[in-house]
Image (cartoon, rainbow, N blue to C red; front, side):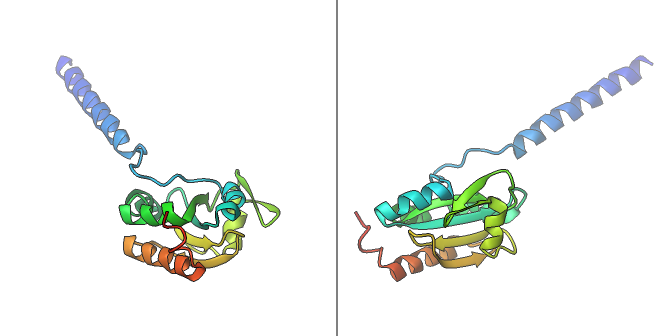
Length: 166
């Protein structure tokens, strides 16, 4: 009987340690060099004053490729240089009914905004001018090269690249 108790205790301790380290691995971690995300309402208020574009990252909490973009693409030096120069970065949870935003004078949930933008899959990236007009939108994962090309294309379309190189 004593042997069964010792083996049972050993197995319990092993499972406890395994569970603890497993949970530590899935905890969200701070991302180094992450953009300074703002709300869409704030971006739409500030953008006309400094004539910057607005990048909207519409994501879903359980989305693997959304997390990959947040961890690998947005913090990259290439993307950060373009964002810091000409964009106000915004994150919107495409399935959230808790948070409300104001877009073009209409108050709506983030989920309703995602529907208005035509989101059919996550991640979904939208570029707007300083007035909130959609310039470009892409569905799905964008790697560093793809997002940089999208950002620079919108910059050159609006003539911002040369003027915002302070």
